[in-house]
Image (cartoon, rainbow over all chains, first blue to last red; front, side, top):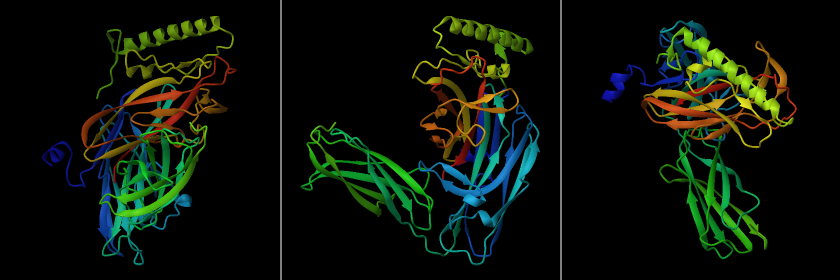
Length: 277
Length: 177
């Protein structure tokens, strides 16, 4: 904690993210403090959150753009900033937010304060509400590349004293084809069907027709957290001790929360034929 | 943090002239060599901005691709992340004009011609543009180097030697939730 306060200014949620491109003409970077808003809120509450954006003296003058978007996630968990028309999640906080200013010029070594205003509606529903504030540099030309550096400020609002439902469904369980007799690669796609984000991991077990377990495996815990209304893929490899004989086999996949609670389970069958490889 | 304006031991503005001159010589030499090779060896020369030379002394800022091999052509760069929380870094191409593909560039605007396969970017993970994805995650750091590789496979063998191509890549850092 001492380190945190000595290296980075405190007073925010103490989050700063700086990206420098060492391949830029003059190294260019963005420093963003107040880089996360994660709070409990009540219906009708108003919050103001300060985000400071700054550059170094060696950076060029930059025209910075700030957008409020829906907080989607790609299958690998990467943030997906969703514009209004694509932001269809019932857990979106985007309509509650606005930023001022949303465009400005930042001189070398300068700092600009952005005010993020949150107005929670009276009739807000239970669970979590999510949005992204995206802060972009202009494109920096580096030979063949035009590089934009950007920082996402996640907004995670928890509606206080409401039920947080953490549940999910395995919407797809696929065994890679052609099926190998030595290693079975399995993709598990989970949908967060609850109303709150969570971290989870997946397990898979390979079973023969008699119910004998031939192999098992598990994934690391998902990073980042899985938001409600989003999908997450877990890639697993099952390696039986001996190559599989021709026959029918089953893969049983389970997804658990960090505390080991099972939230989803699904089974799929596959067949190894005589000439399987 | 300061830019490194050194080249072959020379510092300051003179280094730029030397770099530009050296780049031109190397480019001409490579193009001549390519012309002398099999007629199916089409060389794509991407535009050179001398300023790119601040990357490293051994990087000349031209990416010459011979589209006769199935191997990936690679180029590398460096990002630095500082964060006082767990973080995630992703790469994507948000520009609809390039949409993940190196696109013809006339010095001012993008044209219609694109390379056949999209650009890949790798660090701890490899992603394919334009969708991209997470290339690295990390924990709090006062400065972590993130080596980034750009991988391009070129199958088009009928492209003119004089074509220049460019792409827009967005690197986005975020606290991990």
